[in-house]
Amino acid sequence: MKNVAVIGAGTMGNGIAHTFAQAGFKVQLIDISEASLKRGLDTITKNLDRMVSKETITEADKKNTLDNITTFTDITEGVEYASLVVEAATENIDLKLKIFKQLSDDCSEDTILATNTSSISITQIASVTARPDQVIGMHFMNPVPIMKLVEIIRGYNTSDEVTNTTMEMSKQLGKIPVEVNDYPGFVANRILMPMINESIETLYNGVAGVSEIDTVMKLGMAHPMGPLQLADFIGLDVCLSILEVMYDGFKNPKYAPCPLLVNMVRAGKLGVKSGEGFYDYSESRKAEKVSKQFI
Image (cartoon, rainbow, N blue to C red; front, side, top):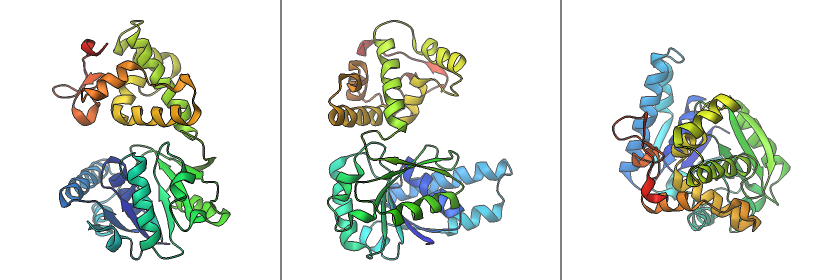
């Protein structure tokens, strides 16, 4: 199984494509526009250049990795020969259902259909396909080329064979796969997102400022990054989306998004991707900027 299609050339998609290509897989990177594909390839190239400068890979490794990636703007064409498809599109249930319905029609009968969703039900995604036993979750962590964990999420109907194959393939990437079951947020985000949300509530209630909250968690809990800074790197819109999925799935108020988070997303303060979130990334990536007008 050396032919992999990746749908989505954004942060997660290009990281997944990079990781597979560097491990020797032939990768078809698919997105709706040439501009998105170019940005994705530019990011992969910059990340490879950084690895060359650190002498973790050679120039030949970089060239081989890039040579392993082919780009497509048409899903049908891009997945034609894929043994595995990894969907890494926007965390939107309607979009994912549309993509998987098409994949069910376009892919060969033995193709494994994986989603990088961080919270949406694998069982629900699989329900729109004619092969629910071949649908599985592969939740990579960001940045994908560096982070070792892959959450492997079994849907209700996912077969043992597909699960075992996906686990083994993750190991071929140098990752550590962990099998979990299909409940909202799985394991990583079921634990992480309430912590991030509570950190935002702590700021919202005026208990402490941004840097103070992050410093307490870094120095007191040995976290490499504070929860508010981490939220900025994940994307506040993504955090909000995951919390909404969990709140809808569990009907438990402890998963209800903090009003500050909701207002910041409405105002377009999404974190690193927009240049401003709990910190200001437009001038200095270290400058704190608490948006008090949203509190």
